[in-house]
Amino acid sequence: NNGYLGMVRQWQQLFYDSRYSETPISSPDYVKLSEAYGMKGFRVKSRTEISDTMKEAQNIKGPVLIEFVVEQHDMVYPMVAAGADLDEMISRPVHEQFKDAEM
Image 1 (cartoon, rainbow, N blue to C red):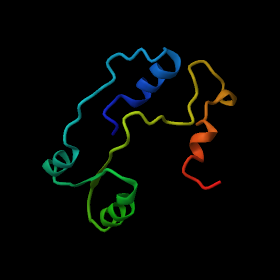
Image 2: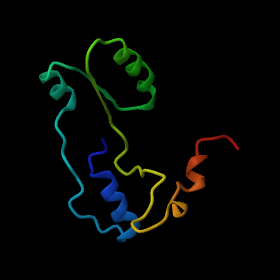
Image 3: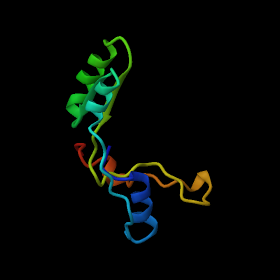
């Protein structure tokens, strides 16, 4: 959950000069919604919460919903532009892949 129609926003950014139209969305409280349906709900807001939340969810008998909240402007890679072949796949810029790594 990034608060946007994420892939639509990404296309608008990459292929339409960042002319955004109707991409921000408001979502229900998914934890409360899951509880309303008798399920256990979790919200993960950081990478440090993932492991513990996954372990806790796996120990629950029955359905579980986990909402993963991600940065609003994160991009999703790889992607293929409309009409492009798979060998024209767009990947994440290399510098972003290694920005947190020691060189």
